[in-house]
Image 1 (cartoon, rainbow, N blue to C red):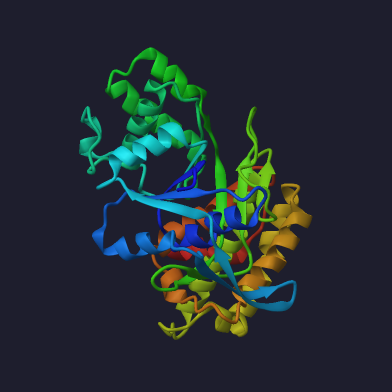
Image 2: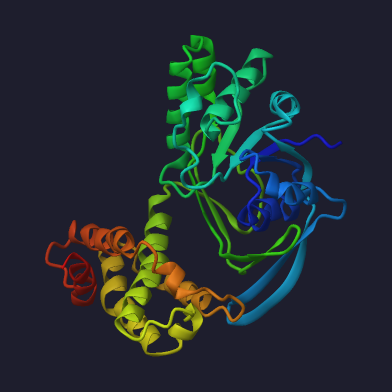
Length: 366
């Protein structure tokens, strides 16, 4: 069995087509132990297939730089799979003896506290941060060096949030001060991930768009986990977060709002809407109200380039992205994606005019 310096919590098809692929393609190639933290027995086949000899397929399908991409790649980075429900002793050994980096993508609610988090010993009913605390405490107890921890959950400042939660658990467990200092000395890394992974391949593998990003916020002592074209070290994540939230996500939400004004065909998909009247309206509001707002914040050229890539992603001929799915939780998305954009721009230009975006927010408030 290979030594695995990467321990990854999560088995999702997103991770299969994102970090796991990067670790297979990048320099140096890195070996991974994948851990199922949910204990979901229905995913046992997926877990077993991840480390199969010869790897698993990731199909890259879409448009990039005006050209159609349709190719298959093999992911051979996963060398071992474990479950927190059945393999705790071996998992603890791997984290204590082999790990250099811990990754996670346990869902956006995966950091939420659970009643079992207060227990003194590891329990399957615990949240991911509580399980992580016990694993890190075990590593510290045998003299292991501090680790670098990369949460990939879609939570702002995800590294800081996870560190805070683990330290809260340590306080609740009345952990030894030396352990607390050791936990604080680990590198807890903020990062942002982006790739549309449209469908699974059974029993394991995924179909994904060409675009992919893993943006990692720099800090003292941090090295990139792998050198790969989709992995970037940045000084501040806010710029990338703003571009994603207020162009890609805002564009999706504006499209959903315009779609709901019409017949609202429940089976309508993004690329078809983009090619028609709804798409014309989205492009118009981007040009008239979104890009000028980014320019006021000093990001005009970057926003134009990001919009061009975003529209190409929306037009992906292989991706059946239903607008009805995007329209879920529409009110909250209007506030976070459009209302927050207007607030951000009006911090520097209080009288900034954006009649279409204002109308979308006002219509929801009415």
